[in-house]
Amino acid sequence: MTSAAPRPRPSPVAGRPWRRFAHTLDVKSSPYLYIAPFFLLFGVFGAFPLLYTAYVSMTDWNLLESTRQWVGAENYVALIQDGYFWNALFNTVSIWLLSTIPQLLVALVVAHMLNRSLRARTFFRMGVLLPNVTSIVAVTIIFAQLFGRDFGAVNWALGLFGFGPVDWQAGTLSSHIAISLIVIWRWTGYNALIYLAAMQAVPSHLYEAATIDGAGQWTQFWRITIPMLRPTIIFTGVVSTIGGFQIIAEPLLFQAGTGNPTGGSDRQFQTVGLYLYEQGFGLYEFGYASAVAWTLCLIIVVMALVNFSITRRIKSG
Image 1 (spheres, rainbow, N blue to C red):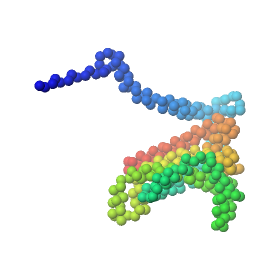
Image 2: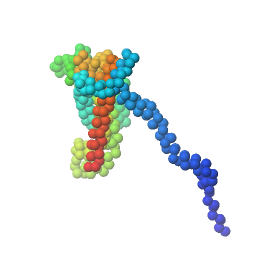
Image 3: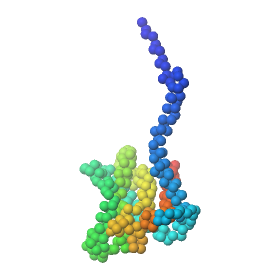
Image 4: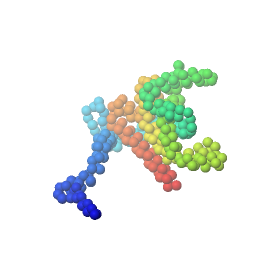
């Protein structure tokens, strides 16, 4: 005796119109409700401050005065003619070049070493990240003492090789090198772990074929690893560029931890971030400081567009 086929169960939205309406509303509106918190937070803490800063950059607004006057693009015109701004931009680019290129090269080598069969690999992988989680204020103050002119450990080490003491904070190039070393020490391990994650995604059969062909470790590194890591290298380069143009804590505290926003007695290591801080919170010129902020934002956007163009060409090639 065969059993009767089961009756089809009615749809939960069939029947009453309000149920169908509620189901349709739930299906179509739920995704927007899930992402709404992000856009609300971004609108309050991201978009609104950005747009308000654009408005402030077109006003003559000093916090010590009660008046605010609309001046249009006068702040930007004054910024283009400001020698202190161009000096700060030069210092920023110089420190960025001295820190980013060696940092990424060393990170590649460190990642390659961590990707090999080593004892206590987990310990070393955790160790390279320790400089990044250390307080930047404490690190910069310690480095300022290490690069001290009279009692610094760096000058003491140079004296062992017959070199005279260097006033690291007084010179332009010397101060840029010292600040760049702080950045390199702090961010090399972070980038090394990013490279390590990308290296572990490289197919192992490529290395096996290269080994059969007689290629050594460094040949495999330059011929296989580096080409496979090109998108990751571009990503870390752009992220390091954005961070390099926004650098402020290291030069701010490098002058023996005094927190002087002028970046030395002759502004020899004042960056754009420090110049913005000086104008906004030292001279209380919020309108001019906002113009500096938006100019820096445009520079970063240009660098991001260059990265997008390079990445698209690499993918299409």
